[in-house]
Each structure stands twice: as C-alpha cells, then as structure tokens.
Length: 399
Length: 224
Image 1 (cartoon, rainbow over the protein chains, first blue to last red):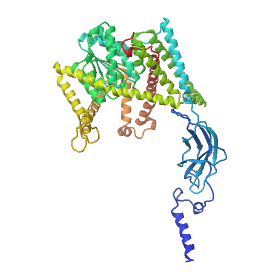
Image 2 (image 1 turned 45 degrees about the vertical axis):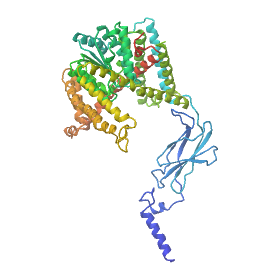
Image 3 (image 1 turned 120 degrees about the vertical axis):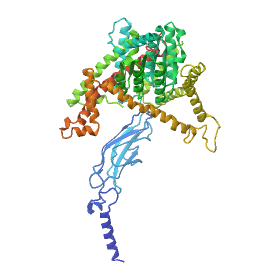
C-alpha cells in the first residue's frame, strides 16, 4: 500500500498536466498549474458614481474598472469578478454581484437613495482573490435633469427662440422669403387637372398612426387640398389605414368644405377606412385607383414598402402624382414614379407654404437658420476633431 | 371653446412630453408612460369607428348597386366571417375553442395564416415587378442627372453581386466594383441621406412647436 501512494500522487500530477482544470491554458507548464499561492492581479481604476437612467429612482450606482492583467492573459486566468458593497470604507460588506471574466462595468440596482456606499471589486481565479480595488463613497440620487441631454436642451431652446422670434417678425409684417417648392405648387395644378377631366382627386395620408408627426403634417395639407377641391367642386377621396386618422380626416375635410362655402358638397363616404394591414391597404388603394380612375394622386405622409405599389399603379392610370414623405428610404421610389416629390422637411413646410400665413412662415425661417447653425457645428466639430480637440464633438454626444 | 379645449390639451400634453424627455425622475417617467398608454387605448378603441365607416360605405354601395358592389359584398362577408370565428362567445366545436378564439389552431388563426398572410405576401411580392418597371424609367438617359444615376446604379448593383467581383478581379483594390460600391454608398449617398434626415428632424421640431403653441391648427379641421 505504501508504494502505491507515491505512484498515485505522480499519476494525479501527470493527469493534471495533461488535462488541466477549466479556465487554465491547456499548454500551461506544470509548475504554473500547481502554483496556487499567487493571487491574480487586481483590477485598477475602479470608479463608482450615481447611475442616471430615464426612470431614475436614485437606486442605482454605476461601477466601472479596468480589467485585471490576468483576465484573458497571463498565467492566472480570472474566472470571475466579485463586487462587494458596504457602508464603511474598511468593511468587506455584502457580495452584490459575481461577474463573468471580461466584464469591466456593473450597475448595482439595490441601493437606497441618499445613502453613501463603498465598493470593492476583486478578481477571483477559482482559488484565490486579488487584492480588492476600492471606490466610494457613492450616493444614488433622484435626479431632476438628464445631464446627457444638455446639448439637446440648449439647441432646442435656441431653435425655439428663433422660431418664436421669426414668427413675431412675420406677425409684424416683415416679408419673409421662402424658396419655391415645385411639388407644392403642383398641388393646385393637380386638382385643377382633375377638375378639367371630371375625375376625382385621391389623397392618401400615409399609413402612419395619428401620433406620427408626418400624419399630422399630412392632415394640415389635406385641409388646403380639400378647400381647393371644394372650390373646384371636385370629388376628393381620402382612403385611410387608421381609424383615428379617418376621424381626423373627416373633420378636416368637412371644415374645409364649410370654409370654402360648399358644405353641401362634402361627401362623408369619400373618407374611407380600408384596413390597418399594410398590404391589404395597398391593395384596396390600388383598387380605388383602377376602378375610380382619379386624375390626381397625392401621397403625403408616412409611407413604407407600399409607396412604390401606389406610385406605380398611379403611373399606370396616367394620373398626375405628387408625393411627400420624411421616410428617407421611400423617397427614391416616389422620385422615380411620381411627377413631384416633397423631400423630408418640405412635407412639414407645406402647411406654411400653401397658406402663406405669416405665423407659420416664421417657423420655416427658424428651421432654415437652425440648419445654418447645424452646418456650422458639424464643420467646427470636424475641424476641431481633426486638429486633435475632440471635446467639442464629444459635448454633443447624447443618450 | 370648441377649439380652445383641444388646443389647451395639446399644449399641456406636448409640454409634459417635453419635460418627460429631459427629467428622469421616476414619477415623471411613470406619468409619461401612463399618458402613452392612454393614447394606445384611445387608438385601440377607435377601431370601432373604422368598422362603422367600413360597414356604412360598403352597405350603401351594395344597396345602390353601384359599380363594383360585388367587391363590397365580399369585403363585408369576409369581415363578418372573421369576426364570427374570432369573437363569437361560447361557440365551441369540440373540446377545443376553435371558434371564438384567435389562439393557435383555431379557425380564425388558420384563416389568418392561410388566407390573409398569403394575400398580403402576394401584394408585397408585386413590388419586384414594380421595382423593375420603375427602374427602367428612372435609368433612362434623359439628362445628365439621370445618366449619373444610371452609372451609379450599375456600379452599385454589380458591386453587390459575385459577377461584379469577378469582372474587376485583378485590378487594384480601389478600382474594383465592390470598393466603388462601398464608396458611393458611404460618402455621397450617406451625405444626402443625412442631409435629408437633419432637415426632416428640424421640420419635425418646428412643426411640433407650432402645434404645441397652437400656431398650427389646421389638423383640427379648418384654420380659423
């Protein structure tokens, strides 16, 4: 029996060398495998600070650190990081998290708001822990301002101030120049053409819900189109994919007919709810185009894959087509298949452009000046970053 | 008052959502979420208005035997069948609730998967033909801009298929079609894309401000 023990010990050593435990490099020398007295290198740069999210309850503290030198490298592979939390700097405290190797950040979600906490982070290799890195005190607070959104607030306030200033200027009678938008000039022409041909006008306000700003922009244009159609006594068909949009469109068209002095010409059956399903709606609108042959098709609002189905069907029926959307991916289809296209911002400018109301034109001028400022900021950011001053650009990073 | 009350509600709701964006306090966030849920409930409930409109418009068409009234009849019949299979309370065939249920395995679900989905898929697949006809018109050499579009399109289309790689194999990297495709998509295309996007974003902000402040009100019906 005595002779067996050294032989068994030798066999275990050899087996350990050939089949090392998980987490160790298979080709690690035997001397390093059996060395269990050295702990892994400690993490460095541990920081603890209040974590600010969009639903801030003051109950989170964010930790970040640099990985241990033995994490993924070195002889002693780190198997996990252990995060300890205490209310005194010299206490070990409570283990609040064990994290995978390669993790260099953690959000501790169990803290009490207003209480100061100290943190210790250790790298653990399965046998020994590294010396702890410490940080603190850190306090979780209920914040009243999302600091990462400061640039958004500053630029928004500047923008709003400009819009209000130009609106006041316009209200005082200052003439504000607005460039010509051919697509909007074509709206009246399109309705006129439909009148001459004795055929209806088709107005599709997109498939967006009422909470989509493009849909609201479209309804403001619908008001103008309905007024022109009412004056020309031309039927206006408005198919909708959302029932709330249908209700709003009914109201808008009805009021426009009343304002134009032709309330009797308003036909509620021309404001139609078709389907919420995207391609069922596309099929139904295409059917209206083929059966009722509108002479003018206006597609203004939020569109997705159905845009080309509409535009190509309309092209087949030889209708004059004006389209507009802020969904950039659909613009090429409209540009290709329609006679006129409103690109992005022109959709939002339409209401002001068509009504020429000074108050609305002020908003357009404000947008134009904000664009100038945006261009200046982009150029300054590019130049400064290229010159090795990235702070300016970084200030605009937001969450 | 007919206008003032909606405008006041718009102002208050709009300002609150602005505050919600900048203030992370959990009570503000919770109220913001609540407000969004109200919106969702209102929108969901409004489907009844849509159904009412659908029934009214198509019933009139059928009653007056207007052109295409047969399609209206099909539309209303199909809607009635789907409603019955999806909602009729207590109607059960066998041990499983195959009627009055929208669960997997129910008749409603079967009709949805085997009728509605293929029909929508058919409409979607028509896009392939429409893209071909639209591309044919767009790429005709009518003007310098159209020529530029044609050349760019050829480069991009070829650069994204193995044939493009084969055609320019052996050339310096910056003369190969895949590299040119990437360059076109990353620089001129992306620059135009972002330009439009930024303009649209400012348009949204201006429009939002006009609506919140009550300057823009034609979406409520009329302008006065």
